[in-house]
Length: 100
Image (cartoon, rainbow, N blue to C red; front, side, top):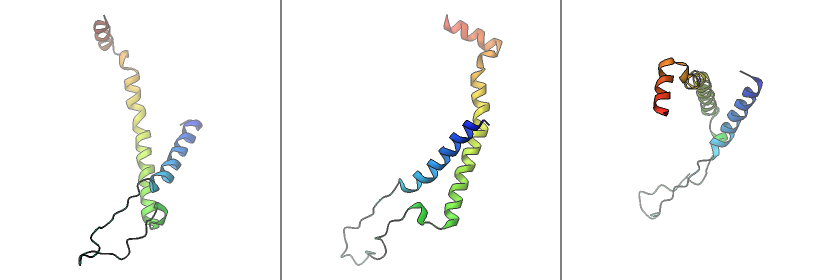
């Protein structure tokens, strides 16, 4: 891998690590607070990715890096096959026939 590709990959990984954790916040409200089934304790705090336990953070980041590595490992062969599709003589003949 070239240095430029490694730098771009590192920037992408850091972007995902810092952006994904806080992008999907939501709020749950319960309108019937006078109901005997309403749970009203402890639901006021919202957390971020960095508030999670360390093992969850490490698991998330490790799976993210693994997924990116797998994508980087398997994408070039697929792109290479697509790039050289017309190197096959029969495919080129078929392509030329269709283009005419």
